[in-house]
Length: 321
Picture 1 (cartoon, rainbow, N blue to C red):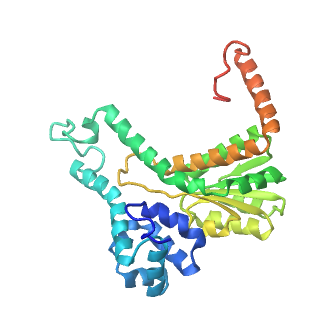
Picture 2 (cartoon, rainbow, N blue to C red; picture 1 turned 45 degrees about the vertical axis):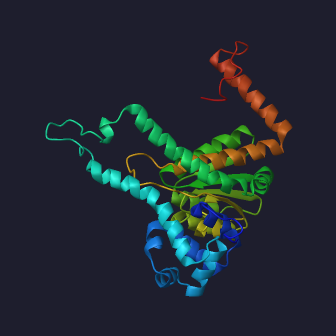
Picture 3 (tube, rainbow, N blue to C red; picture 1 turned 120 degrees about the vertical axis):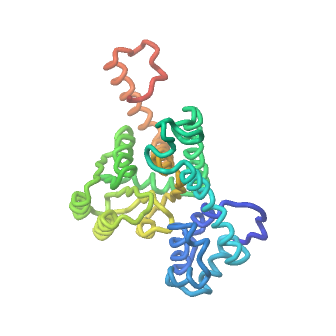
């Protein structure tokens, strides 16, 4: 990909993620290093980048051109610009005094400009903007993901196992299970590392593991996925494109986390993962439209009858609470 053919501003983080599947192994190592810490990569010399990635200087130069930059200097400039999104939040935190209770004067009242002094709608807007940015950045990646192939594997699987660890991925593993159950798929979710290993050792070629990890670098999750692959199971991974988990996947749904230094709010990356889950499950539903429609109809009737609103205008109520 040549920047001369596509001049002007582009999102270097999304561009790197898009290029990962086509990169040479050495270039993938450079991509992984950069995506792990944009700011550090922007500050590093070409020699330091090569040393830390364990590749040659020529590989770093080749990588820069592959992702659309004229040279490493342009690559570092774009990385610095991308990293600056986090820097402005870091400066804001420093100005506020950082930490709970900071931002208050001797009277105990919030200082002007501190988070506590801002109107609620301003904070709501800030949270919304970060969520929107996470969704927008990942939207382009998801448009190119192999959802149809992954959905076909889920449709044909004798059993589906969803693995997730940590805060967001643990909760979303259950979310994935809830969505697949509605479509009549046999599915279980596991968040405990020992149980994941135990389950993985029982799998066979007619099983599919769906692994959720924003970083793709959780050792216990990687071990469980390797065990599952060793027994012939297929792997769908929702994860960072240059990660070890991505390298294991039969079908990769790429996700890029872009966290700011506004540390007081939960990670926005889980919204990107939820979007990916919704697209994957919707693809599965559309691949078997008649069966999906009938299962959802039964569920709607059962729930409306339970709530006592069957036939009383509850048509647009959500399918579940």
